[in-house]
Image 1: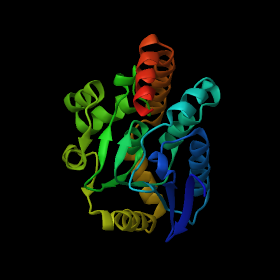
Image 2: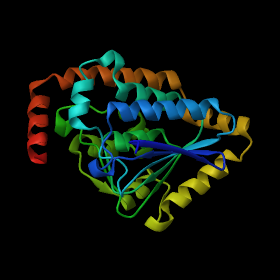
Image 3: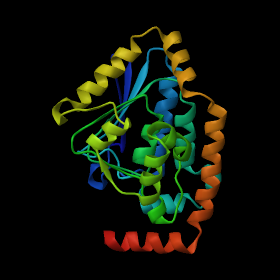
Length: 247
């Protein structure tokens, strides 16, 4: 069974992170598969929207630490960074269905989604500073714009987890939906978007999102700071402690 499953229905491409035994922690190979699915969706006029969800009761626990550290040694081909940049330039609507954990990139990728629905048990966390790192995916730009500077400071610097109701209150998610309706709601809303007049929908989406070049520049600035931080003694210590807790 593939760690990423893509399926089509009603003009919607559903991308499922399918590594439930690891809470869908993302590997380089998974990033490559997600990018390929997004490329396929963007090039296919029959697809009007894309959904993102995780299998087995979790959205994603973020990056698979061992795979991530190995891939980070080659920043020029780093799949996680290419995925982030792909999100930023993706032209079709993205709808996310979040249950369980959404850690690190599991939360920052949501800042690129148009509609987000969360199950009551969803838990979001941005642990970058605690790992001796800096945020990615344009979060240092997008999160303050979404929730305000004061709250973004709290979420990024203190790195405390927050639940689905708080995410809804902050405007990070559109609605909290019962487990048994979550995937159906995300699909219904994606299907509704896919059925809209395509040119008007995409033009409106681009206008709301503002300056794409500024976002890509911030993503690159974050990536440079991230790679520098990754080599620091405090990051090494934080990752060693994290791995030790997992054993």
